[in-house]
Length: 287
Image (tube, rainbow, N blue to C red; front, top):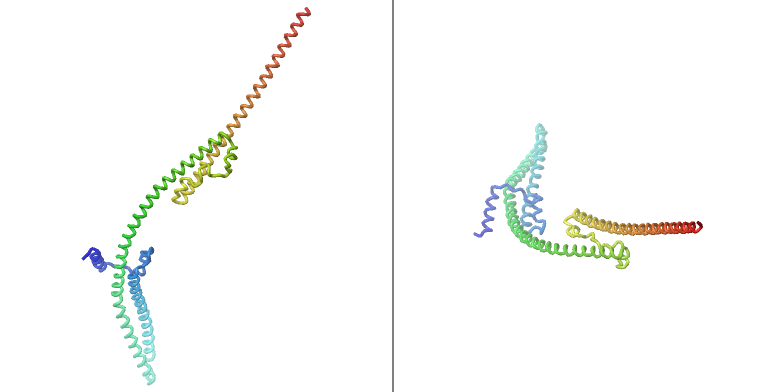
């Protein structure tokens, strides 16, 4: 006896002492076949269980209806017990026959209903055995596929990290080039390099590291926010650099004006001194 048949024998023995719910009425059982659907042998066993359930429901309804009819017939007999007319006696006899016939049908249906639970359990247990066998094979297949997909994900992660680093290096290089050229040419570099004001190519793009990974929408939003924050900081630093240059230019102009003003004052002082010398010389001559 091989391992698989031995396992099934053990399962059959366990089912004898285990109360199994009716599988076809359990939504969780139907979910077991969500990936590939139900195999043919399970579909066939499912049909058998459904047939027994339908027969059981039909017999229960029939017994209930027969008992209602019997009750009405019994009432009819009670209501006409005192009537001694011949026609009434004949009617009572017919009603008696109908009650006997009803009792026979009720007895037959109830006998069948006594057998149905056993048949239903056997059919349901067989369906459970098929389900267990399918589940075992399905889990082994899933495990193999999980390992294969996990290996693929591991390889892709390695490639992803490499490409993210390459991308970041190029973004850094772009920023360094832009910063250097901006220091040399100033705002004119935009025209020299044919760069539009809204160009993302020269700065950290919105699909930067965090946006590349994007495990979920929140992380993607964080990546986009961080990229935007980097762009804002870079723009702010460029503005500070331009403002600093303008301030230095203004300071240099102020120093030139101050020097010019000091020179003019020195010239005026020299002229006054010279004029004073000439006046003194003229006075000595007159004396």
